[in-house]
Image (tube, rainbow, N blue to C red; front, side, top):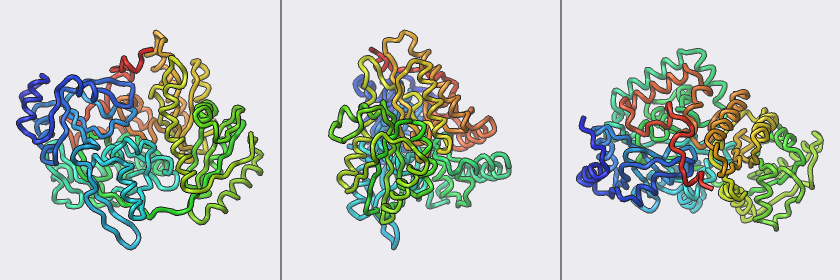
Length: 528
């Protein structure tokens, strides 16, 4: 195996193999050395493929030369999974491989086939024009792409009722590490070595009583940590099984070049109820009782985050006192009865509200509310001068029954470390985004980052929670994967990686790694 390790050598070799664009200039390499995480890793080359043939050629070149290959979409990930030291294969929203290929409508649903570079929101716009939508709707839809959504097992606020993107994935086309094009609707296209080994792995997992019990106990939980071994619990044909295993695999098993998704009829009629609690514990406690009512979404926003929203949107009528917001969304004709149930529940449990609950109706007003909610993260990031809400413990999840004590315990971690923190997220799924604000002038900042991550995840594991509920794996989380799943499960996951990518060419260091959480920190993001 010859290894080309110089930038110019990689660039020259690739230009002779593909019709797409190969970048080795400093400006482009610097641009793709960062994403929404706190890391910086400079690649050898950036490639924007013109077509699937280019993808195949680049993958084969990377395999032959032993150069790591990272597939990248919109770069919206917060865990550093879109960065790599070798070749970064970019599916750009403005370039090729970003189309809606076809729509096929049946009596009850619609199937849409897309390329990986298509923006999530662009897909939603196309679907709405036909009276449909994709219920798995990440808050990053304006900048994230469908390939990345599948690779990270994306979901969003409506996962409470509608689940993650794996529920809607019908089939994929992907390129293996050996450059084979696989269509999961055609089992004959799946290499025998993969087909047989995946079937054997499934048999071994299902024969392991402890493993199946663990999977069965967690299958209703919103999580995106490790590989999607939950697929083994379902009696799926091998093609569908392989497609499901690629969900959440962050480009470590193959490069997705096409996907078919099932869309749902758009639900008309939406309302939201805003409840402002004096005590965060009350807000967290309420969630477990509202969840069984069949509501569409339950969002929670702590008082610190509300300060940000109130400062940017003073006309929303939010109380000025320290309060915590629970926003419950209802959809369809049953929404009015559901709202009455929530009102009754709040009275019966004696929760202390700062003001009377508010009801918001109408598509436009609802859309504005969600726009404000989705804009919370970029606003919080630079809320305090000299501080930054670094992506550290931003996507944890627990059973919603434990949400109230969990919030109390993680707040204690932040208090103990002298940190102001924004706490918000998809409370109905037990999925919280924790955004402590770090003083960038602290000379011991890396040590503090490590300590806070260790302490927060210790709380997560105390409640048998997950290190990532919807944003997916990456360099930020690899050190904690074994604590969540245990060595036996990690063995099954490593075996799956070995089946698809024995030489560890595809996106190494983002699922399993011995690196430290504070390796490769981006100096610019930590600079005062």
